[in-house]
Length: 170
Image 1 (spheres, one colour):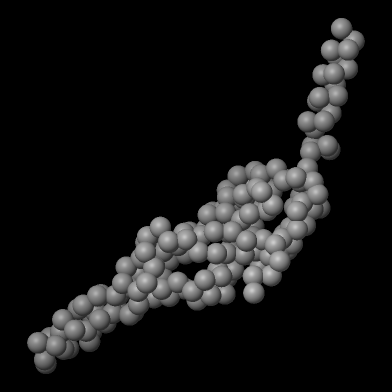
Image 2 (cartoon, one colour):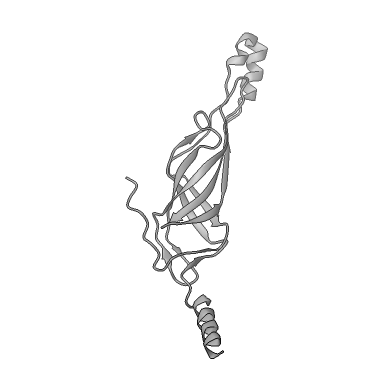
């Protein structure tokens, strides 16, 4: 009986936070950099793109995740500009950062619309109606290097020691 009690005590101690590795807590904030240029004229729903951690993040136990971890984002909606001044549209979301073999799921979205040219279309219709269908709105783009704030979507335990970020992307 003493063996079972001792075994239970050791198991409880090993499972306690003092013996656990670092944890990325749900809601932890990350400064993320978009590593690929995206455009409403070329992107398609479901396209994936590269992101990276731009600033170090200090976890609650003092562990620091160094800048440079990479991850993945996804195009949620992409619409090219169109005739009659219809603007382009591009919506993306950040999916995860990869820390070693572990994925830290992220919450972050960004959307952008191109400039609508309704005024130009109306003026053209009035003055030169045959040219109206050829007036296009503007495409929209998200430039390489665009910064976004993202948050951890759930608690993620990490191995100890935390693996370093991969080498430079260049």
